[in-house]
Structure formats: C-alpha cells, structure tokens
Amino acid sequence: VYQVFESVAKKYDVMNDSMTLGIHRVWKDILVHKMNPSPGTLLLDVAGGTGDIAFRFINYVRASRERQLQRKLRHHQNLSWQEISESYQEDKSNSLGDSQVVVCDINKEMLKVGKQKAQHLGYSAGLSWVLGNAEELPFDDDKFDVYTIAFGIRNVTRIDLALQEAYRVLKPGGRFLCLEFSHVSNPLLSRLYDLYSFQVIPVLGEVIAGDWKSYQYLVESIRRFPPQEEFKAMIEDAGFFKVDYQNLNFGIVAIHSGFKL
Amino acid sequence: SVLRFPLSPPQRPLHASVVLRRTSDERQKEPGAASSQFDSGPGPLPEQESRGPHPSYTGQGGQESEDFESEEQLQHRILTAALEFVPEHGWTAEAIAEGAKTLGLSSAAAGMFHSDGSELILHFVSQCNTKLSEMLEQEQKLVQLGEAEKKPMDQFLRDAVEARLRMLIPYIEKWPQALSILLLPHNIPSSLNLLTSMIDDIWHYAGDQSTDFNWYTRRAVLTGVYNTTELVMLQDSSPDFEDTWRFLENRVADVMNMGSTANQVQSTGEALVQGLMGAAVTIKNLAGMNQRR
Image (spheres, each protein chain N blue to C red):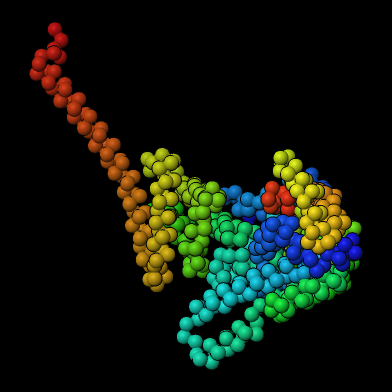
C-alpha cells in the first residue's frame, strides 16, 4: 500500500479529478458541510495527505467566524472608537476563532504534496502536518472534536484498529466522519459502475500517471471494502453511538457518522 | 415528571457509553422512576433509531442506577443546556454546540441534531407544556383540598394562557424565528401535535363546566385565542406585556359570550318555533278544523 501511494502522490489530485470527473470535490464539500464545524473546533484529518478536507474545513470555519463577528457587531450599537479598533484587531489575529486542523498521513510524499499545496494556496494558520499510522495514532486520548478520514480507510489493513484509535483520540461528544467508496445497490447502475471502474480507470491511470497497477489496486480495494450496513456495525463495535450513513450518488460513495458519547 | 439529572463531571459521558452498551443488551428491565418521558405531546426528537428499540433507562435502585443514561436522555440534557444560549445565538446549531460544551462534551455533539435548530425548539415547547400541566395539576390539588377557591371559567382560561405565554418571555426576541421554523413542513406534525395537546390539557383542567360547546369547537376556539395572543405578545412593548393580557381578557370574554349567544340563539329558536306552532293552531281554529263534534 505504501508504495502505491508513493508513486501516486504527485499525481493524486489530477487522478482524482479525472477518475471521478471532478465530482470528488462535491463529495468533500458535502462532508465538511455535514460536519458544520463551529469556530474553535479541533479537527484531525487522517489519511488526509494532500489536504483537501483540511482546506475546506479552514474555509468553512473562516466564513462562519466572519458571520459570527458581524452578528456581534450588529448587536453592539454605540461602541466607543477604542472598542471598535479592538474588535478589528481581534478579527485579524483570530480569523479562525481558534479552530485547528491536524493532517495525519502515513506517507511522507503525500504530506509533502499537501504542504506545498497549502503554501501555494495561502493556507498557513491553524494547520499542522503529522506523520502517523491510522492504526496507532501519535496523539493523546480525548483530544479532538472531529475525526475525518476521506477515502483513506479502505487502505488500512486493520480497519477495526483504526476505528478504535479514532474512538480513543476523540473527546467525549466528538464526531467520527468517514467518506468512502461504498456499495451501489441499484443493479443497472452497479453494472455501469463496474464497467467504468475496471475498464476506464486503470487506463486513465496509465495515461495520466503512468501507473496501471496502482489504479488496478485502487479499484479492487474499493470492491473489497465492506458495504454500508456492515461498516456501520464495525463503527458501532468500536464504541460509537448514533451511527448513521448517507449515500451519495446512489451508494458510489457513503458518509458514515458516529459520536463518542 | 420533570427532567432532573445530576450535573455530571466530564468523565460521565464515557461511563455512560460503557453503560449504554450494557443496557442495550439487557433490554428486559423496566424503566425506572425518573424517566424522561413527557406526558404532553410526542417525544420531540423524531430520530431514526439505528439499533432497534431504544436502550431504556434502567434506574433500578441499588447498584449502578444513578449513572445510567440513554442516548435520548443525553440529547434532552444537551438541549436543555442549550436553552441558556438561545437569547444570544438564536435557535441554532451554535446554541446547541454551546450547550454541549457546558456539559463537558465536544461542540461536535451538536451534529446529532438537525442544523436548523428544530429539535431545540420542539424540546423547549414540550418542556413548557409539561411545566404548564404541572402547574394546573397543582392548582387542581389545592382546590380539591379546599385550600383554594375554584376559579370561574374565564379567569381560569386567562390565567392558564397567560402562564403559558409568560414562559416565552426570556426568549421573546428570538421567538419569531422559532415560530417560522415550527411552520416548516417537516416540523408541522410535531408542532401541531404539541399545540393541540397543550390546549386539550387546559380544557381538561378547566373541568366540565357546561358551555354547550362540543369538543372540537372548544379546542379550535381556545387555539385561536392562544395563537392570536401569542402574536400580539410578539409585538407588544408595554411594561410587563399589559397590552397582551388585556387583549387576552377581551378574547376570553368573547369566548364566554359566544357560549351565551349560542344559548340565546337556541332559546330564541325554541321561542320562534313555539310561536309558529301557536300561530298554526290559531289558524286551524279559525278555519274550524279543530272542532271535534
């Protein structure tokens, strides 16, 4: 698995766009929207390599924070000049409202690409990059408000261990969110999807990234991943409550959510 | 039955989760004394249960009773805690997040609820209705024990509606927002249910002093009084809402008059019919048809 991602790292984003025809961006947007993070949230994004979820999180929280500050200002009429200038300063220094995201990935190459992207796009505050294994996270217990893993969990050898680690590092009340390829129940769509996966994707892999084998692996790992209900049961086994899933695009992708209560 | 849970240290939710799994395995025990069921209206949380029947509260005395808590109860606690933040944040997911934080939970716990704040509002309405029922129950007990006078019907109705509306006062600024959310299609069944059961409750405690109304009419009439008074209250800026209570007084008086008008109509009707009968008999006499030879 490690070598797959080493070779895949640089072209990861391009491949994502071409394989899913850009829809993966929508899926990730939906994930962050579902999270609805409030300013001050501490997010751990596992297997988050190139930072897609992390950047979206930062954007969301920033916008949310701006709205919050606007509402506060509207409520406080008759401020003195001193108070107004103080609020602007607070604005500048705390545009994220103390929210933070830690991106954790097992693969150095993916993290490198992610850091470069962050620099390029201008993301700096509230972002950290940590090398780590989902089955054995280098973090203390009860640390994070939200744990996300987008298109990463199917690559983990011991999914149950990853789920247990997720449970461990989340604060009480914290939320587990997983965005992953899942099973399509509609038979017609399923056949089309299979056709696309096995015939088109490896070809794209060869053409764009020069790597047929990795993308063959990718498609097979998607097929091997447990279906929605089974994965939900696994999440419950790890100790999460109110576990639920939402199918996107008829089950091509599903978002599973659970709470540590 | 009022929600009353001991304040828990931050460790408790973890403990509760361990214990929740045990309770879901032993589903046969009966719910204990301090359950969180509301008597008026349905549970305000139309959540889909992902694991079959709700793990129920099994507060049997002795062993581990006090710390048991189900998901639903935890949700109620979060919503109750969130009410404190409504004046500042409105009926929103943010208020719920702040509420969760005061219980030692992460703000992400607000993700358990709908993002438009529906459940928070329904929870609040349900709580108010429960409080009202308890108040009326208390009053009734006092009257039965002879410690208080039984109120005349109009006074009773006025006091009950006023008491219920006064519960809105701390949240009055954000209440219009709440009303508009309650009118959303997916909330209407629950909100309507809560409203009608509250009105029914009031009539129940008003006793069966005959007013010649049938059940539907009484319900509709009092609902109308309640709704219009609520709307007036939202725009009232008089000290302690005097104008609203005066409006309420007039509406209740209308209700009482309506009763007597119906009486009058009925007795007028009877008188009319008798008059007609009398006229018919007179005509028959004149025409000589009533003679019996």
